[in-house]
Length: 76
Image 1 (spheres, rainbow, N blue to C red):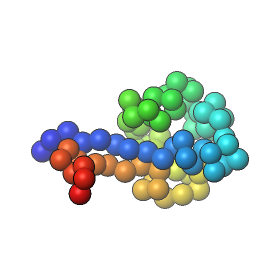
Image 2: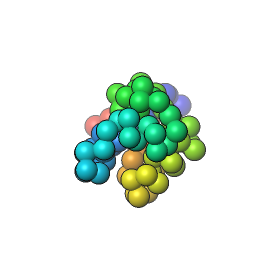
Image 3: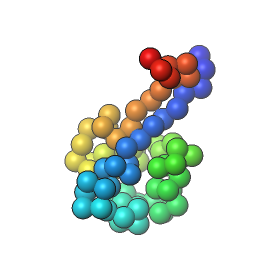
Image 4: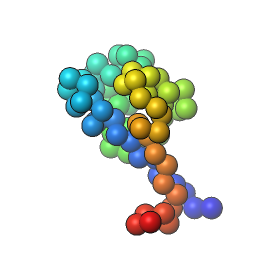
């Protein structure tokens, strides 16, 4: 099994939530703004607990915030 990639829609969800700032989201979920930046850039994968907290802030299912793509799935 190859290494996969976790993708997210955090930036889009922030935009549609009255253009919520990275700082506002960070405060709501208990992390730093730098953590939000790293997640949006795909450089940091959140813990399961943090992923659920982010989904709860936006009021959407986890799958609407995060998706997982296995290596080799691209283009399918």
